[in-house]
Structures are given as C-alpha cells and as structure tokens.
Length: 278
Length: 294
Image (cartoon, rainbow over the protein chains, first blue to last red):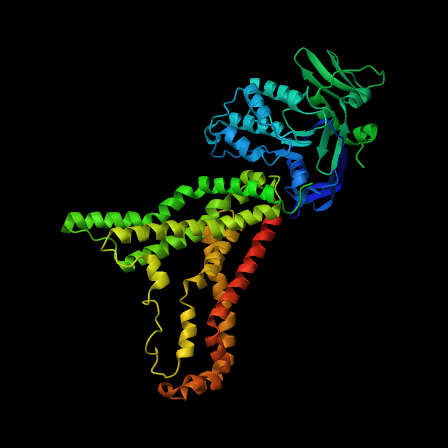
C-alpha cells in the first residue's frame, strides 16, 4: 500500500505540492488527473524515488522511495513521458535491463510487443517516438512489478495503439499490481482507470472509485439544462450535466465533466467525498 | 533475501551490463585513441617512403608527445562519455531506478573509469608500440622500455645537479619521483576529478571541470604561496648567505630540517597527498550519486 502523508515538494522557492495526503490501495488502476503544473509528474517521480520530499513522508510497503533500495526498485517501474532511445535492439534492451527485475518475463515482453505490432529486433534509436513508447510500455508491463507509475503513457501513440495499450494493461497486469497513470488524455483511458485522483496544487480534490462517484454524482445526458446542475456542457445532440445524485440511480461517469465539476466546486466535492486522504 | 547494500551476484550481473554499455558508448573511441600511435607511425612511414625512398617512422620525442596527449584525452574525456548521461533526465532516471544498489553502481562506475579504461588504453597502446619497435628497426626504444627501464629518465644520475657534494641520499629520493608506479594514483585521481565533473555539470562537462581545476589550483596557490614565503623567509635568507658550492647534505639537513625532511620523503608525500585527493574525490562521487535527483 502507498501512504502519502503531508507531502510537500518545492523547486527552490516555488512550491509544487503542499500538504498532500492520500492512500493508494493494492490491485487498482488509479488515474491521476490535474491541470498543467499541479505536480502530477513531480508526484510520480517522488513515488519512484527520483526526488526527495521537502516535507512529509511517502511509505510504499515500508520503504522510503528515495533510499532507492534494490528490493524496492525491483517492485516498481516508472514510465516517464520522455523515454531514451538507446543504441540497441528492443530485445537486447529487454534482456539486458530485465535481468535486474525479479519478476521480469521476456516471453511476456515479446507478446506485448507483438500485440503492439512492434519489431523486437529493431534498434531502439531507429524507432519512431510511438514505437519507442510502445517498447517501453511493453517493458514496463513485462517487469511484473507491484507498482507501476506511468506518466502520459498514451502520448505519441496512434489511435490503434491506444486501444492496444488498454488491452495490454488489462491483459498483462497482475491482480496484485497497483497502477498510477497520470494523463490529460482522459478519453483514452476512460474504460481503464478506477479510482480517479484529481490533484490540485495544494490539495487532493478527489480520490474516489467510479462506484463512489456515481453514488454521489449523476451524469445526465439530455437536451435541457437542469438549473441545479453542478456543471453542464453542450455536446453534439444535447448536453452533459453533472448533478448531485439524490435518486440513487447509477450513471456512466464522464471523466472530463467530472474533472470540470471538481474544479468548479472544489470545497463542495471535497466535503461530499470526505476524501480518504489522511 | 539479497542484501540491500551489496550482493556479489547482482553486482557481477550489473558490472557485465555496465561493461557492455562501456564498449557500446566508448569502445570505438578507445580503439581509435589507443591505435593512434600506430596509425600515425604508418602514415609518417609511408610518407617518408614515398618522398625519400626509405622508411622512417615517428621519431622518439614525437611518439612520447603523442602518447602524452592521447593519454590525457582518454583520461579526461572518457568519464563524461561513459557516465555523463546520468545528468540527463531521461537516461539518468533509468540508471537511478535500475534495481541495483547505489554502492554496486558506484563500484562498477569506479572500476570502469579508473581501472578498465586506462588499463585497456595503456595495454593496447604499449602493446602496439612494442610490436612496431620489434618490426621497424628505425623505431628505437619502445615507449614501454623508455618509461619503465630507461636510464635516460634518471635525470639525477651521475654527478649531482648542483656542484654540491654528498647528496646521493637526496638524489635517491628524487629518483623515486621518476618511478612510473608513482603516477598510477595520479591517473586514478585525474579520472575521478573528471568523473565528478561529468556527474555535476549538465553541459560542457570536460571543459567546465578543467576550468574548475584551474580555478581551484589558483585559489590554493594564492593561499599557500604567501604562507610558504613567510615561513621560509629566514631559510631563504640563511641560504643566500651561504656558499652553495660548498654546501653539503649534512649541513643542509642541520640548517633546514623541515626542507630536508620533505626532500627525503618526496615519494611518501606525493603518495599521501594523492591518496588524500583521491579519497576526497571518491567521497564526492559517492555523495553525488547517492543524492542524485531527477
């Protein structure tokens, strides 16, 4: 389990994260959403141990990530938005680096690469950005780590690859694995992420499962705007609006609408969900 | 359960991987640099053959100079080529998050930069040079023989450098400084300094490190020179009042005990000061690696 308590981080005088507290449970695929510059990437790098917290603590199964102990590192993989194009073939890269992750599975790497229609014998420095990204995604999933942190994994992927990515994550992620995916491309991952974390610069605005969200919010697709709607937006053929769920009827979560609702009513949403932060 | 600090099996796997990366990143450059002597020898030989009709390879001083320059280029350039990528966000993050302990990464890095690279370079360079000198009669003494066995380097042999008498004890200690083995720690020290620079600076790593070394040297000179001048003023005054042609080693020892102690322990002082600098560099490299962030 990941426990974050009163986390703060700043670059010099510039505060990026302040008093962030939350708990991430095992076996879930968390979607980490937030506006530009709220510190999503910073949070992921802090969890991976690439940065040291200014204040507060991060506890991942008893490890302090920044100590970068081998047994901790072999249970995490951080897939950065920008990936290096090393001068070796994908299969040579996977064999060479994979040997350090206890549960790395080369066969699985080949399978995922095949699903992405990527050539394992191709040199990585000759791959396009999308091919390179798919190679790293394949490697990340083949590491079979308990925690997988992905920063904008669908950036640079073409439309079929985005579908392949969702398929690969669902098929090749073990039940014990916890994924934390930071993204702006919410539509790419709508069917994948649950729970959803919405981060603000100095707060966690929401950390709730889709079930909890639909229990408290109702996503209405209609032609008329309800005056009590927390948020409404015109879409082709009508509008999407978010209301308090007072009837108990379940609805399909529209993550973009949810995101905008949360940002429009920060305090209300925090009170409604009484965040499981502390 | 494997140790979190050092596990021999994991270290060996990592070292092999790091060695492969070294070959991939710097192998060709190292090969070019270590065969530069041979290549230039062949070019000059062919040139003299076509112009004068006789084969004449590189002459001794030029071979020595070329060896010095290429050695310096390898020692100061290789750390940035091999580990400079660690300051890059993309590649540096991948390095830091590899499930190997920091100590294992550190040892492998030190072994490759301070031992493997210089050893491979010197072995190939000297090996080829010996080979050339065996085949080419115009070559003369090989660099290896010149450095390790030549009397030419024994500058203090024979008559004393000054018209002084009974200085053999001092001369013997000065000769210690000409022992090539004494320069192994200097080679290690140089690579460590440039390794530290490669881990600190994001761009122009070698140039900035060189600049820092020059600035630090100037700063040390500014501090040390006046101290030495002040403390040594009476000694200089005494020395200037003496007839140096009649000065014996015994008189020097009695009159200037501190300076004669230095003169009789040059090898030890050199080794200890190099060891101090090297330990400091090793510590700084370790701390930089341990606290590296992206």
